[in-house]
Length: 302
Image (cartoon, rainbow, N blue to C red):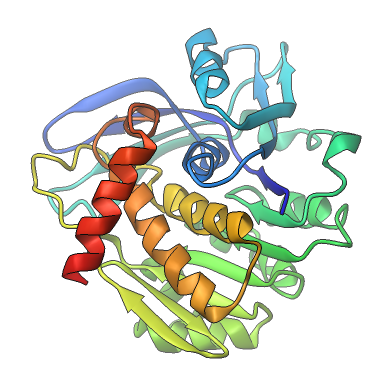
């Protein structure tokens, strides 16, 4: 099934308790696409960057086999989306230092005609109105899944809830689920969100794994056990999880509960490589053999 992703392609600045990195390649769309490309191709990107987008970042995306960049617009007079964050000793907790929307404040990119047959759509983090506008271009889609963040929950809550009525799945973290519902129990929060529109919800629990709540049941898996020294930067891990998850579903052309359980594992494995470096480096430097080796070890323990 042709797989399309839209969201941010950004420039990130990250501080962790042990290191920092400035101006690294990031953005929800970039992380998702790099992760999904391990499992399926082509991965069609719809996004926009500004004239300040580093040529090195473009080279990274072009180096990833299976990415289609026909829907990536480079706007020379605009600014690229940028984000800065600081992680605490508990890396599940972070503080957003700044968010510069840049091209996200402009009209969304044009969708290439060659993308019209896309059947799996991932609406990575961006304004929910933009997500919904893009989704409306694919009336024959088979599966549409969205992500969001605390910014949109705070400033575009009505638009976000309108989006919920038009998607099949929602992928969010536990704090966002609680923020949306006022419910601290992740499973109960997911059920409440399903009542608002999507058919299934995945709640990401950071180092504690993730939970799938689906009409056919519930499924919870742990995270990959990495040593503290291996965890460099959690940024983009959630988007990488979604890329591994939907990349697997698109590759097997199946959206059943059983297929989603397997896809959850691949999402978890893929995200674990993101954690091991700043930016996209962990994904770019990995290979399929390493992915399979880690999956085999994971399944033996779980």
